Image (cartoon, rainbow, N blue to C red; front, top):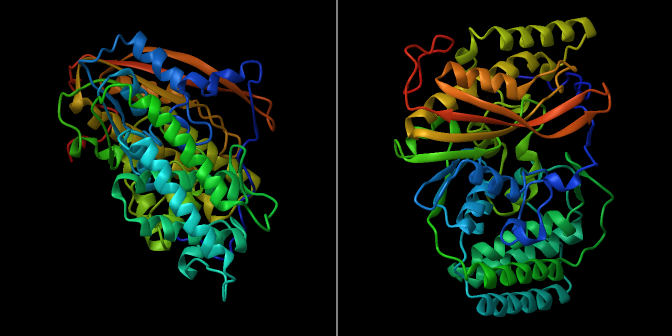
Length: 450
């Protein structure tokens, strides 16, 4: 990773505070009728299931076709496709998000047995907690270092670790993954000190929390959803844990009829922070080395996952607008006298982000069928010293250079940057793939099969 002096000043916060268009708050909310499986665990500000429904209908996708979400997060697109009876596949590099999405696709557990086993786990946990411990259970020191300070208070953490141990000891493979996902949601939702708005932060410490009760509430919600989901068909759906920039390594050529997704945006949002506590508790990351390995598989959308050896920026070395934005960011940094290690990376991160997306879109062509429709939900950003980045427009330009047809750039909703009072657009970039490669990807490095 690019070295930053431990004594370097922290960068001046440059992430714009945003006000969502409250005139239409329903745009990004999960409708009650759609909530089954989706609410088991969900990223803050994930796009809603009804947006997937709308675009699949517009794309005229049927049950004989296959949909891909290459940045599937916790699985909104693939879960909704399965509910609609449309085969689907997802790709997600974040291990916690991949786990959540995969569990949300598994509707096989018997709801009554699920509740019965959970009740026994809860009873055994409560008996253990009634015995006064010699000392409270804690996380290993290496794990403690990578979670947000004061993410969870000592007593709730002790109770949480006792419950986690009981879940793992139950040994029932048919149900444990669902128990663990319910555990993850309970931890971040009501047990920890975390809050989301939309960035993850630490709120007022909780001296105690009803750990077992919170978990059982999530287990019960899953069981109730399973009763409904099991009335639907078992449509093929799968999520691969992989890098979306290496898509041809996991998806069959000429197999995808539609794409609907929302990649990261170019800003300072570290997506691994959003899932850090539950990722540590479930053992997906245990130390700084494993965290670094996780970040290396992600699109370079923020300065905290940029590495010296990164070369994705070569893909946009000849793209004039992206190069100009990077120059403007660097010029503004110098004018403002910003010298921290992170601020020095703003311009390079911008180029790496769009270069990574170019690499993704180039590889994606090989798995699409002719006539495939694509929808990319992206948002404008002004996180880097208030230099405006029109993400949707730039991605559309990159896609067009790679042979995609730009169908439209459609407004989904707006956000207001309180610092600049500028309207930031969140858009759906709608593309179509004709099946014909351009004679030359003149703007980009010729690396799509490298």
